[in-house]
Length: 119
Image (tube, rainbow, N blue to C red; front, top):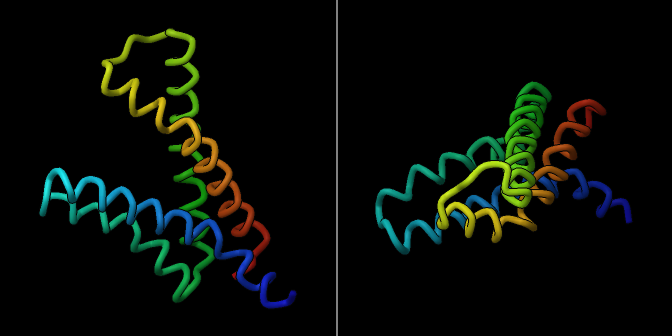
């Protein structure tokens, strides 16, 4: 049980690394070599697993909470038809219905870890 509690704090970082890999794989199938810069998004999360830093943890938490909040507002405004979006953007928002709340929860988890000083 003690080992599970030790790895519990790494769940959000592994989540964001897996999302980066999935995003890279999807874009790489369609665009080829232009998808490689996407892998740069995973570097801070890998760095947190290797050599944790409270400042980087706080910055990642705040950044992704803000981005996730913006995504939630966009998703709600699309579902209420407040703004009109293109059909491809609507498909992306529809498929992101599960991704957006999960992203927000994981961002809050990272932020909570930085406040508690888990590292």
